[in-house]
Image (cartoon, rainbow, N blue to C red; front, side, top):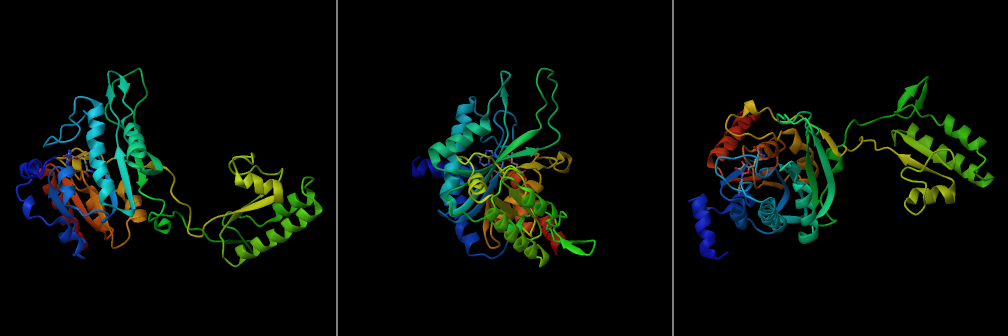
Amino acid sequence: MSQLALKERINCYNPVMDSIHLQDNILSNSDIHPIFYTGDSLIVMKQILSKSIDCCMTSPPYWGQRCYENGGIGLEKKSDDFVENLLNVIKEIHRVLKDTGSFWLNIGDTYKNKSLQGIPWRVAIKMMDEQGWIMRNDIIWNKHKGAMDSSSDKLRNIHEMIFHFVKSNDYYYNDEAIRLNPQTTIIRKGAIVSSSGVCGIRYKRQIELSTSLSKDEKEMAMQDLQQVLKRVECGEIPDFRMIIRNQQRATHSNSERVSGRAKELNEKGYYFLFYSKNGALPTDVWEILPEDTQNREKHYAVYPEDLCKIPILSTCPRNGIVLDPFCGSGTTNKVAYSLQRRSIGIDISEEYINIAKQRVSQLHLNLL
Ligand SMILES: C[S@@+](CC[C@H](N)C(=O)[O-])C[C@H]1O[C@@H](n2cnc3c(N)ncnc32)[C@H](O)[C@@H]1O
């Protein structure tokens, strides 16, 4: 696109764009108040420096399903055109993300002529094949309830996809910030045992009675088990499991070809699995109720605040910047603000940007 055409589009969506120094505003500022821009995200993002954003989280419009206030992406006649337009925006996201950055894409699917279009996967596969993204997770967002559906020849649709993409293997990930249910050792009948009550007696018996372990292997297994029990006793690890040859199955597979653990089991006769003191990581199925649309009269989005918490906590450092190029009523920015991260929100609709600003200012008042 020529510079002139670009400027025309900028002016078309945002007459004051020329005076915006997007990057200056946010980079030189320690204020965590979100910065919002009205405009076509593809154009506005051109103002953002390459490799300056830590985390992008967004929910683009569904294809052919909703008519937002100011048009924009999603109104294409063919799904291929929608995918292409979205990929153009995603290419810009790739440019502005730091090499350590993450992109979380929440994307819904659409039926046409009774056929589910598979849009989330069509976008995701092109992202990997054509733009070099690395997919770390495909998360099922179980919304528990879907839109009204009168069909009687298919199941009700109640999930959406959220993809976690990164640019490189060297990406920022704070697992400690999102672990669930931290565990500690417990005392049972006066003895310190693991958080799930493992005290080692059953494993000791299995080792002694094993017909599969050699004498040397039994000795080594017993010694190592004693060491692990000591670590549990002093609180260094909250819990563990022991896998013994021909007693328990290897975690993923018994085939050495697919499991390094299976190899260890065959060669050594046993191995241990240790649980983190800080709790387990969340799974890739998220049970989150959609936003109650009555709360937002003018903007019909189901995207709830809880959806943004894991992405922002795990992949945006405290002083980092979050970007939502389809911010609508500003949920991502509101959550970023409440988690004390700076953020940029872009939407083509001035009305939605005003709602976003209002929601953030209400939060600001509550935080004061
Ligand atoms: C699914 S909604 C986002 C909802 C948002 N997560 C929220 O919290 O309300 C998609 C948004 O994309 C906006 N949009 C569509 N095309 C756009 C474009 N080319 N540039 C910027 N925003 C666009 C729409 O106005 C709409 O608000």
